[in-house]
Amino acid sequence: MSKPREADLYGPVKAHLQRQGYDVKGEVGAADVVGRRGDDVVVVELKLGFSLALFHQGIERLALTDDVYVAVPAGGKGKALRNNVKLARRLGLGVLTVRLRDGFVEALADPGPYAARKLKKKKKSLLRAFDRLEGDPNEGGATRHGIVTGYRQDALKCARFLAVHGPSKGAKVAEWAEVPVATRIMADDHYGWFTRVERGVYGLTEAGAKGLADWGDV
Image (cartoon, rainbow, N blue to C red):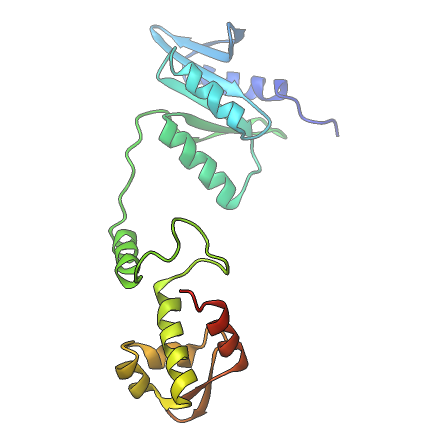
């Protein structure tokens, strides 16, 4: 099977626009595809895959008409495809995919002004993370050992307490270290820092001692 060419997208895209009543021509000026239906003009830029150059071309064509699509072969999947479609929407561009084996064209997004949908749940989660984090330990980027979260700060408080006082009841750690969820943190043990000595009592592991050394500046 021969390697796909951008020209292989043209026929299916042209037929797709013609079914919508457009008169279609290729390579008009700087545009790959231009469709005209009375005073309505649509422009489509063809590429074999998403790229920054494709989005740049699409943005340039918005100076000609509000109806600009980028077209790529079908087959992209998952997060990368969703992110590219989301980016196109933010730029006001439409997205067409072309199934090369049979010429089927699907519009994944139409051109138009983008209005971001605010997710209240995600905003609340962000604010909780902000309020839980003490100080500004990340300085806008990763620390020497990675990103510091409020959860890790709480785990470090528990580890410091155990390093000084030895195995202790979760309730005592919660009160003295001022970490209300201390028992849950030590029981879940996401970092491998804690060990259950007996019911309700937790101690510090070798990994926990190393974690204190690594994260002692947090």
